[in-house]
Length: 317
Ligand code: SAM
Ligand code: DTB
Ligand code: SF4
Image 1 (cartoon, protein in one colour):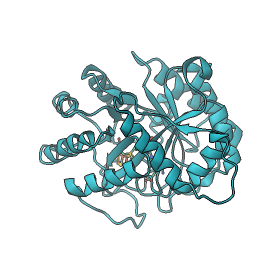
Image 2 (spheres, protein in one colour):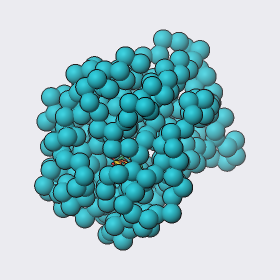
Image 3 (cartoon, rainbow, N blue to C red):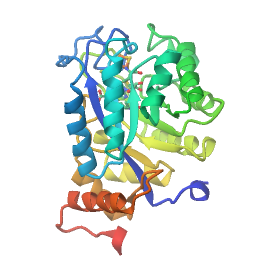
Image 4 (cartoon, rainbow, N blue to C red):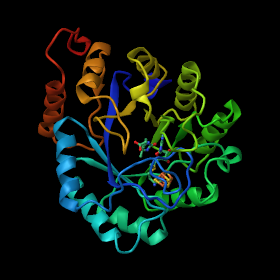
């Protein structure tokens, strides 16, 4: 199935940046950025446009092809939106794909983001409709579906997935995939996150997910949405290399790349590139890149991340 639609040795790499951190009015029980819980996180207001562009440049230099900007908002405000649009334009001009996750959108905001050149909008359904109310009470499932519908109608690509490890049942995991696979079109990108348990959140002591059940979730997502990129998302820092390899074999073909997710740790870039090399995986080219020089620069950046020390480079053998 995977090989019918993708080169199984290519994995798409995206880098995340939190452009506005903490003090979020929503009550998502998994989230370190919710203002409802005390997680000791340093709160920050919207980052300056130039600082965001500097971070995007850094991401490009380590070989990332998509830059995803996240804000801890219920929804963007009229005051903040113009700055966000400048960020999209600036990152796009650097030759990277752009992605944002800013909470709920109205129709006009969605159109403005599309006009600025935003490629992807991330808005997760998180879990099944039945389990959802145990995790979030300040935003409904129907509101999430509405935002996704605006994004689709504005011609942008959808990134939508969920989280495992919040106490949901196997049926709830199936319920999430059924929702995603029954959207009018499959999301182009389906992030499957393993809960990062953050002290101070209501889920800090949640039970671990069985690693094989996590892998099964990726495999079923791959089968149900054969043309989508399935992203092995948050939680990789807590997984060993063997588990990540199994995830790629099960059909995951995208990761977050760079040492930080939004507020929590992600594996170091050099470690990821060493693992890719040992598995014979290469980072995927940008979907619409027209410029081979740009692609060569990405590959060069990736190689630079690897430690030249002793490991078997399966990608070039
Ligand atoms: N505030 C916006 C929203 O919720 O739409 C955007 C940012 S929010 C942090 C993006 C997604 O990150 C959430 O939908 C959730 O799936 C994921 N996430 C947040 N905290 C997480 C955690 N501790 N572990 C795993 N995934 C998490
Ligand atoms: C997604 O599904 N996972 C990313 C991204 N979309 C925005 C976020 C993961 C956040 C993990 C917790 C943190 O670093 O704050
Ligand atoms: Fe806010 Fe998003 Fe975190 Fe929910 S997941 S508390 S909306 S930042």
